Image 1 (cartoon, one colour):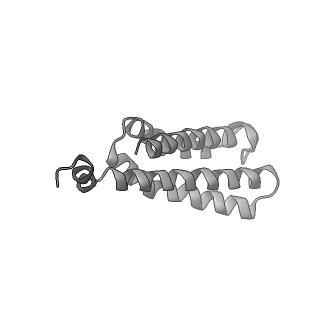
Image 2 (image 1 turned 135 degrees about the vertical axis):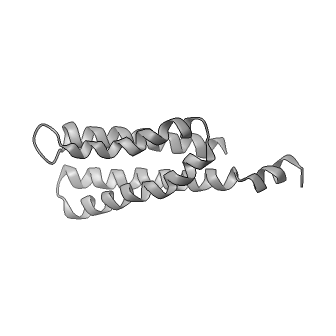
Length: 120
């Protein structure tokens, strides 16, 4: 279970860094950065809960991360050059975060905790 928590947190941190760097410095929509950098705010909202292993945070993040997956796919297939490459990276990170969230939420279910502790 801790592997899913920490791999999910690592993907989340990488996704936050990618979103901020992409929209401010690497390949912003407008020179000098764009307001699209604000897309990192929901990710920051999940950081505390994921670091502390809160099941509810992993549950709602498994839904929210699908927006980042969709954006990554769209920008990877519609943009060209560096922006397309960054889109594929965003897609991979969001997919990794999605899988980690699903695994953590499933393994931390109260019904699973009873089975793992031997209290059936």
